[in-house]
Structures are given as C-alpha cells and as structure tokens.
Amino acid sequence: MSAIRLPYVKYICPHAPKIPVQLNRSMLMPSWFDLTGLSPEDAEDEAGIKKASEGIKAVIEHEIKNGIPSHRIILGGFSQGGALSLYTALTCHHKLAGVVALSCWLPLHKTFPQAAGSNVNKDISILQCHGEIDPMIPLKYAQMTAEKLKKAINPASLQFKAYLMQHCTCPQEMMAVKEFIAKQLPPV
Image (cartoon, one colour):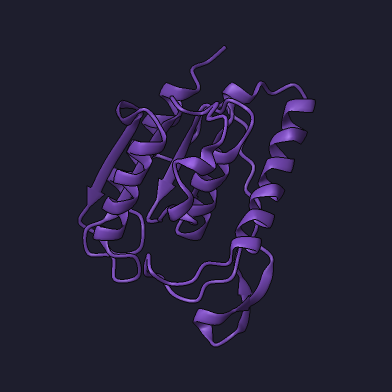
C-alpha cells in the first residue's frame, strides 16, 4: 500500500487526553469524550463532546492565524476521532475543505440538522467509510449517520463507502482517503 503522502499537505494529528470512560468500567484511556455505550440510543457526553470540539476548533483557528485558509483544512479521524471530526465540521463557523470519517458515527445526532447553525459547511465534502462487519459500531449505525448527514449537508457532497472489514482500516479505504484528500486539496 502506498502511504498517504502529498508533499504540499501539512498533517496535524492531535491525541485524545486520558479520561475515565464508563464503557470501559471507568478506566483511564485516551478518549475525546466519555462513552456510556455505542448504540444511537445510549446517553451521550454532551459537555465532553462540545469541549473536545472546541479544542479542535482552537487548532483550526491556530492554523488560520498561521496562514492556512480554512477552505484548505480537512478534518478526519477513525472511530471516536471520526465522530469528533464530523461534529466539529458541522458546527464550525469556518468553511472547511472536507471531512474523512472512518468507522464512526455522528455524536449528538438528535440535535442535527439544527445544531449546524449557520451551516457555512452545507456543501462540505465528506468521505465516510465503514466496515461491513464492524462489531463495535455496526454498519447500520454508519448508514443511519449517512442519512442524518444528508439532512445537514448537500447530499451530493457525501461519499459513503463500505469495505469487507471489521473495526479497522484496509488498503482500499486508505487509497480512497488519499484520493479524497488530493481532490479536496489540489496543489496551489
């Protein structure tokens, strides 16, 4: 598999802080926000999700101040990181280039599309990929997220791809990510 390398692209990979996670018997672990379960009906850590999102928005602000136009910023992540990327992009006040959402869901899904507010990212491009046999976040939850996203953004801006895999990545998915980034961030 070829690496996702585009020489004109800067990658920033923030790490989640270690916090107690109820889903894991309140053990300390890297997590953007607390989780009580992985079902759409489970209670969500609204305060934690919003706090984590504000942290990512601060990174966006920092990059804009350093000369990166917001329309050249893509958010992305896997699992909880992908969930945070979706939430942050949809509630961000800056126009962003896109979102790579891998094996994830839309946090606080019941608040959308209203939570999108001014919806400056109504036409944001989203690449959502998921494993067909994911035991942690079943494919049906990803499909529910895709349907919710189509109500919050221009439906034509969403690409949904499923791969024969579990809660992981595969070479075909990584190639789709590379192609998505190259399309959204052409050389300047």
